[in-house]
Amino acid sequence: MTDEQRPRKRDLLWGRMPTDRTVTTEADNAVPLSLRVAAGYAWRLLLIAAAAGVIIWLVIQLKLLVIPLLVGILITALLWPVFEWMLRKRFPRWLAILIALVGTLAIVTGLLWLVGWQVAREWPSVQKSTMQALDEFQQYLMEGPLHLSAGQIQDYIDQGFALIQEQAQLLWSGALAIGSTAGHVVVGMLLTIFVLICLLADGGGIWRWTTKLFPRDARPAVDAAARSGWRTVVSYAKTQLLVATIDSIGIGLGAFLLGVPLAIPVAVLVFLGAFIPIVGAVATGAVAVFLALVYNDPWNAFWMLVVVIGVQQLEGHILQPILMGSAVKVHPLAVVLVVAGGSMIAGIPGALFAVPLAAFVNVVAVTLSSGSWKTGSRPTGDLIWSTVPRERRRRNT
Image (cartoon, rainbow, N blue to C red; front, top):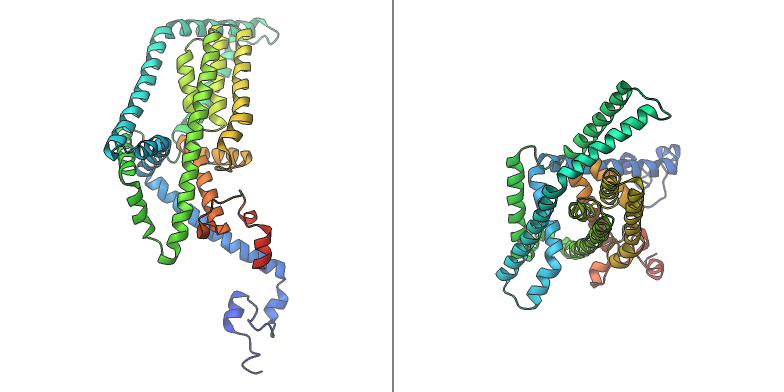
């Protein structure tokens, strides 16, 4: 056997065919091509899973730094349209930062004051009505068709409270919970404010320094992909802010007109819950219906449910498709899966950051795979393998 016919050691080790394709080894003949392809996919998927596991482990270990950083980035995305508008109007950067911070603080303080004021004003009557409704329901269980005893009702109540406590503990003490002490919360808030100020003051400089961590040849692609991802996150945050405002006004106004107590706290709760897609809307709407049921009557609760469903249908079928447009392309099934997965891994923070992170990763992948970073054009498509036009694929093949 000559040197040209002798199989190369590297080809035998990795299961590859020789480059000249003139010699076929016994190992290649013994292993079907489909099995070799499956093995190639398997070890690559294992490497990706291992890398993702290491990243998640590092995030868990650095949770007190990662969560304030992500919150700061998300708040920056929320404030960015107004902040950018002030810069275009030639506001000094320091003044634009001051207006953004003071305005945000004033809005949050005003909402908290309204919530505290109405809760303090109506809580005694709500508590009394709630206890009365529970007593009536317990009486119905004992005297109605079920004929439950007091002991059985108490057992069911204990089981229900145990289930609620278990789920609440799982949700609140997720892998990325902000912290278990008040000190952690205070430090996280201060760090979030510091991150927000730094990003507004010199976000461009921070990003230029970050790109230098990548190889020189990869920097243009990384820069273009990340900028496309950032525009997507800003568009998502702006849309969610508008949708959350419309949801809170619609459900809060409906609760006020129907005479449901704590209409302002319900509206604020709906506003905050709207930033967690699907899950937040369902949970906050259930609170409004529950208050209408225990404070008023089932008929009032029915109309409150109609209002909640109507507002959510308006959001899901009209507002979201029109306002999101082509900037954020995440399928509803993907939204459900990433929100569920994020809440399982990281509790409330995971559910909050799941969709913007998924949108960012999607646009970055599309930008890199489509080659739009070379021309500076806006990436199109929401699937990596379908972003290249058919004519270009023919030319490449």
